[in-house]
Length: 190
Image 1 (cartoon, rainbow, N blue to C red):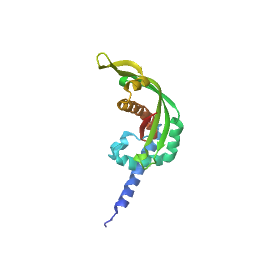
Image 2: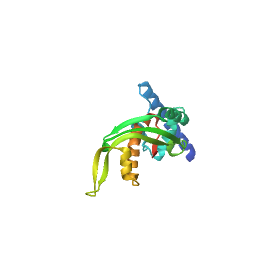
Image 3: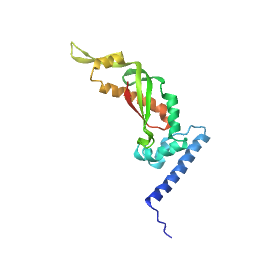
Image 4: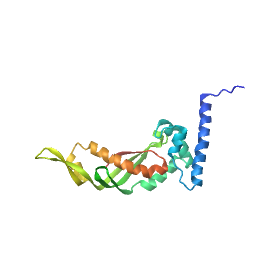
């Protein structure tokens, strides 16, 4: 006997198998005393690339469903991060910084797997800055320069420095957001 499936039926069958696998995986993590997560093993077993299209369209919706829905996770994220101050140090350029999360914006679960945009405000900090020596007309490093002074020194050419700071904040926050399994993007510093 032959069974003919439409593409939609095949996708539904595949999604149900994946749902069953992922739910049992996350339940097993709980039984072992671990916090359920989007562990790398999930992506290795399913052959789906983390932060790829199939991750955002297949894995993340099941993850959100398992955790009570995307809106529930977003509420938890807002309670934990919005209007909160954070401090971190990075070995990159000897960065030490206090910042506050000023805004968390979501465009829904269907946009890039529920990615949220984060706006931060730098409160204070230091970095190994660079200034132009007027006598030699060469750039010199200034250890532990205040971040606001580095911005002032750069005047209108702040794009690379701002991108560096956003990337460092992103890397710091990404570890904190990992338990929620929601992709983030630091969009601006105010």
